[in-house]
View 1 (cartoon, rainbow, N blue to C red):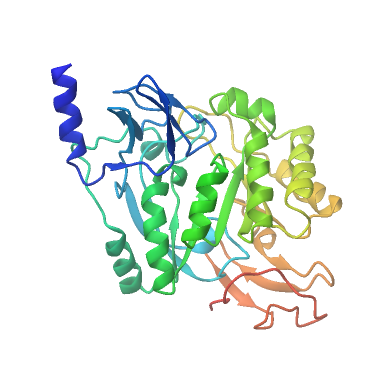
View 2: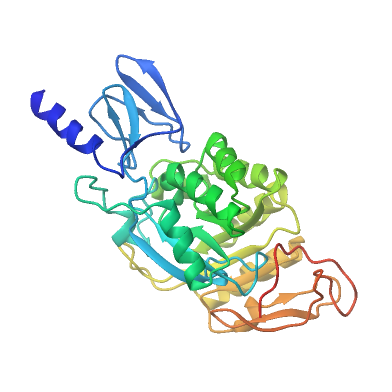
Length: 355
């Protein structure tokens, strides 16, 4: 017990350790985390599922406050956001670990690494804002691994970003609680890209006994609360690349997001513990046609050679409004107020389109 107390005291002295914003005490020195929809019940001296939050003496602490694993300026289209500040760059950052267990994770060197607060370094929100300003970025973005785990620090960072005229966004798996989502929105987060894994079976089998219902609920809530939302479905060979799975995603997208929220189908490539071949290009194009035929107005294909599927087309007259390469905008043919120059249709785009 004495040894555990000494470890706890050392951890508490680290800058990356702060009392968590979202939790409740439930007796017997246990706490319930209210950050993601796992809502872990955590005993004293132990961590939750994601290993980034620890119960110390009956209080919950985040171990990743400003504990960053990467910082990089990146085009917003890479996220992918296609209808949010097109052509801009965001100072992008991440922490460690994840609340999912996807075996095909592209950033597993970040998502599978457990934070070590006794040796990990601290980055302040003000340093991020200064760095974004110095590099000429238009906003800040939490990405690379699951940003929900960084929420305590992101709230402070996003509030500061808003004060400096920068946008703030999340690239997420969407397994966040409504309480956390609202804290982020109130702090200045204006957009969230949510990665839908597939149907209930996919979440249960591959994501660590998770549920798709919370993800679609959050897509609906974020959309209705005024956040800009874009949805991505990574089509993984042998997991969710069959027509039934694709139709499930399209149907739920129409039900919970609507016709005007962008839907991206991204091509999978082998990574981490999953070595099936890359998604068949024919399957990618079938997904595109299924979504367009069902009424989704803005459908995109990512990680494929044909860049035409990355362009934004007017759903009314089919004019090319924004022509893209893999990393950004090549040409735009759209009014400053985001109307189609050919037919006048209003296009749902947030922020200035940057050349």
